Amino acid sequence: MLPLFARFPALEPKLPVLPIGDYPTPVEPLRELGSALQLPRLYVKRDDLTGQLYGGNKIRKLEFLLGAATRGGAGQLLTLGFAGSNHALATAICAQAAGLSSISLLLHQANAAYVRRNLLLGHHFGAELHAVGSVPAAVAQVVWTMLRHGLASGRLPRYVPPGGSSTVGTCGYVNAALELANQVAAGVLPEPDRIYVPLGSMGTAAGLALGLKVAGLNSRVIAVRVVDTQFGDEPKLRRLIDRTAAFLHGLAPAFPRIRSEQCNVEVRDGYFGEGYGVFTDAAREAATEVLKRHGLKIDGTYSGKALAALFDDARSATANDRVVLFWSTSNSRDLSAQIAGADYRELPPAFHRYFTGDCQRWVGES
Ligand SMILES: *Cc1c(COP(=O)(O)O)cnc(C)c1O
Image (cartoon, rainbow, N blue to C red):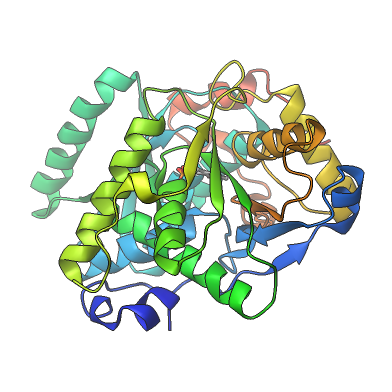
């Protein structure tokens, strides 16, 4: 049973879940990297292993989102993201697992090999892919696409917000914090003083901060911003924490009505670099080290930037006596077999530019 339901049984009948993850995800000591950084008590939470087929942080949110969608009688999901969106791909995979179809509306982003892979995989898993010209155009295109599919099939697609970070999706990370608290209680790791995690659509950091407070842990969440402030910053993060707490309290009064000021969380700027999905030297260095010493693969858009912040804190000796947890949010499952021999020309023409144009190199890629 999910730790959230074990602790608040009244939530279980109200929050249906599509069980696709494999929990608890392991916590492992990073001894070699820890001694190089003079962080003797450095650990990693392996959310790169959430799903058997596809890992990463989106699985935890989609279990709750898919549960709500199937109970609501949805036949099709529609979501929005950047071209290489892990969330859009995870939505396509989870939708297919639940017997639903999916539509992804995708904004332009900096090119990288993972953008190519995620586009091909989205297509492979049956998502209908559409390019969106700009952020302002996205709202109109979401509405128009919803209506067009609604008229054609007699049923409106269910909208899944970018990154899956609605209050329902965020519950996946409230649950993850309670899962971590169980691992602390079982002696898998000491109570972390600090937890480093990327801040994108914010559901991961918001759910963790709220869930840690509920669990009675004092760990400080360092949410490293990897998106433009128009999508993620501290006021928005605090609003999402407040809304999620109110939502869960409304479903089960035993869930405490926590306010975000009570949560131990900060947003860390300074690691975004030149833009969303633009890799930084600091992220490359951090990813190279953790790959070389522990064989752990992390991505450059999100987790690499969060680990770079951890590196800087270790070097400025602000965290060396502490128990530090790096929460990996990347997918580490290899899906290359699914797209071996795939032809990008089967994608809508607007996406061909990612296959014909230049492409950033990331750690571990040839
Ligand atoms: C989406 C994503 C994040 C960001 O999580 P949010 O809940 O959107 O803040 C972090 N890492 C990876 C690999 C992601 O795909």
